[in-house]
Amino acid sequence: MLPRYYEKIEGLIPDKKVLIIYGSRRVGKTTLLKKMLASSGLKYKIDSGENIRVKEILGSGDFELMAEYVEGNQVVAIDEAQEIPEVGKGLKILVDQFPRVKFIATGSSSFDLSQKIGEPLTGRKKVLKLFPFSQGELLLHFTKFELKNNLADYLVFGSYPEIITSKNRQEKMEILDELVSSYLLKDILSLDKIRNPRVLFNLLKLLSLQTGNLVSVNELATQLQVDGKTVNRYLDLLEKTFIIFRLGAFSSNPRKEITKKSKYYFFDNGIRNGVIMQFAPLDLRNDIGQLWENFMVSELYKRNSYLKLFQQFYFWRNFNGQEIDLVVEKDGKRNTFEFKWKKDSGKLPADFRKKYGNVDYQVVSQKNYLQFLQLT
Image (cartoon, rainbow, N blue to C red; front, side, top):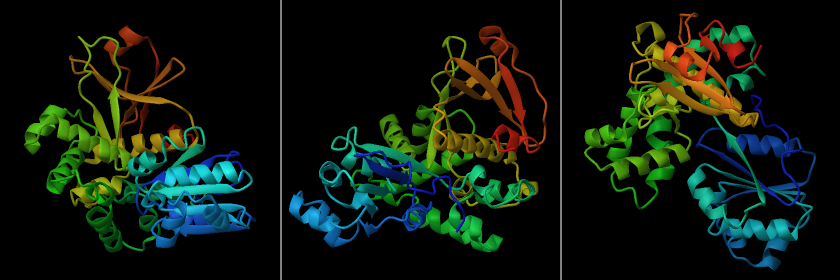
């Protein structure tokens, strides 16, 4: 069982609050939850939101029934909590009435769980996001040499827990095929409003092929033969189910800088490659630049989330064709980055320097990526 960034309950659950753990399916939420509970030294109860009896109890609003359920435990954890109707109201009652008990809820679908939890638990929840293994987490188990030696695998197959522990290439391909075909879109396709799953999956394919490139909603709508509102809704759902995330444009002058397009990245390279069924080795691929950029931006995103750095991420491009892969901004300070698989030198675009000053600029390659992620 490989270590994760979140390992212990201590310090994670503030008084009179529920700890909510979000993440995509098969990312390891249940395994993490069990490990946290087993090492806590506390008396605990763990149940699944798919259990009919648990649904009845926590969805009932019956305080006496809930009291009997909680009695004698220091921690109560509900896995797949989104399966429970009115789970937010039930957890609110528990938190208010049992201040000495710690409560944890996990969910694979952030939009579903947040809709059921949101308002009832306003001010009464702490949210953690769990992603496929980050390089920082893997460094708790592997050496830096081993990380770099396995880099090609991470770029092609990603870092879902089952992928990291699988034994061979064939097994990894089968796992990703199952993840994409059986689990990836399960939360979204379960919604009655999704009438055309083919359009949704074709949208994912287009995003896979355009990873790191500018994306226009209108162009996507034209290619998919649907309206822009549908594309925007599907993009929003894909973000909320931890499949993709969006980078907006950095700009203070819309007339000279691109602002109406976005970039979309996948939280996991393996999922990106699984969508288009491309698992060829790096030396046989023509998309290594896209794989490297997606990997680095997603790794930085994970780090930002785990360490609560509150950084803002953007890309920059102007109509003269000058561009920067990533602009990181925090407290008014900007840092800029270019992601190059082999090349390790470059310079800040002249137009950006002229407009925003001589900000810090760095080319991130396979040689210095651990330093970039501050893992050395």
